[in-house]
Image 1 (spheres, helix red, strand yellow):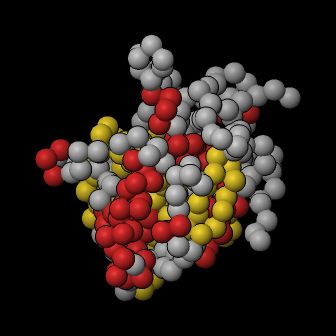
Image 2 (cartoon, one colour):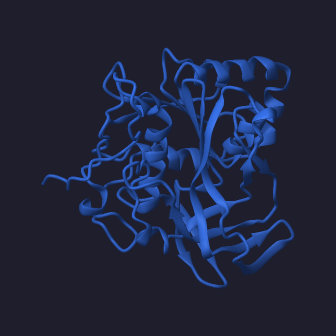
Length: 314
């Protein structure tokens, strides 16, 4: 079994306690066992590096509520009775589709049932592409062959009283977020062309004006280029689906860009516990599971996925 990455002291790209609040949801997720039960798909078509890094990041210590990660190599085995969130990480989406080609209708039905019954779906890169195949996405997502690199100059769009991904924009602006052939999210689909279960589409994380995509490798080979034409591009998007929620990411928050220059980029193991990227991924999972916090017993809407503004206790 993979070992969780040990906690490290906050550095230049990591969150200090005063940035995070106390790390707990203001409206705690109600789960049977006191933990959030995660099904992490590691079957046909999945990148070993991606799922191993996702697992390590979600097993960082002191998360509240804690995340219990179970690996599964068959999406048909993921049920609402056993899990709260399904995560499909990076890999090759077509390999997954081909693997389930003879069971495609059953797969779509199973995943939709899971989400309709209040489950969360988190799709990273390949998982985001598969959301289109599964017919659970609100945004049009185009396949692109931009290559491998990273985005910089990003910002979180939610209001401060929502803050489901509680990461300060001052840190996000300089953060290098790993990218590898992920989809580009366009505008939300017209209501007439998407499932009636899909509501509230929104971009959660996007590229700022002046932000850029630095590419270090393309399908044609090594190529170094930097482009600012992706300003306003959504990197993380979400929508509600019946009683559940779908969160999709074109970038790999689970993988650390360890070194970068204009001519070279190195990627390594999982993002460090306490880092900006680890916190984004962890909060994407919390966010996907926090559907019930959108309303109170009085029927009034309240912020969902919000974090306490109080500092962490020693």
